[in-house]
Every structure is written in structure tokens, then in C-alpha cells.
Length: 134
Image 1: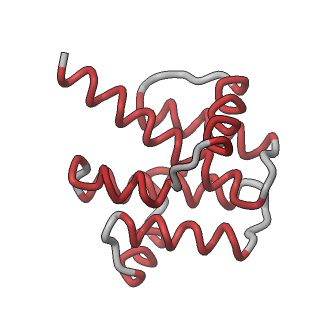
Image 2: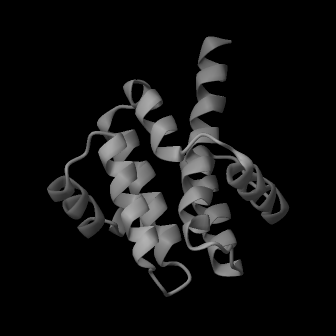
């Protein structure tokens, strides 16, 4: 039961990270939703419907807890590979609408900082996206 709870919490963290970065520019477009659905299935093994992505986005927008604070509080539960996967997924969502706002880029760096990943490591992570983006 503990493993199942941790697994569910990790899945929720993956979803929250992706919808938070998608919403950083104040909008959720179809390409971002499609990317979130595809990456969520790849990272968790579970499918998620676009309507559930929209609901998660609404819940994230209504939450008073900033995602960076949530990541910081949960980083001890994540090994380095899981932290890197979260940032890769966030970046792929960020670029899926073919425009990167400064606010979105700042959020990605805030998330990396919350996960204790230095900027130079973040740069290396983003340069190595081929396994996740194929």
C-alpha cells in the first residue's frame, strides 16, 4: 500500500509540474495538452484525458501552494533521474506551443532550484532530451 501511495503521489507530482509550466504564460493550448497527455503516459504508464489535464490546470491555478515549494518539500522522495525527468517533461511542455515566454523560462529555473539542480546541470539535462522526446 505504501508503494502504491508513493506511486500515486509521484504521478500527481509529474502532472502538477507539467500543468504548472503550461500555465506559466496564463494559457493552456491544445499542443500543450497533447504533450502533457503523451508525456504523462510515457512517464507513468497511465493514460490521461485532455479534460483531466484541464481540471488539473484549474486546480493548480486555484492552489495557494507554489509548485516550487511543493517540489522542494518532495525532492527527498526523488532520485536524480526522477528530478531530471520532471525537468525534461516540463521543458518539453514549455516548448510545445512554439513560444517560450520569459516567465516560463524563469519557472523552469525555479523548479530546478527547488529540486537542487544547478543551472549548469539543467543546461546539460535539456541538451540531452532525445530519450524523452522520441
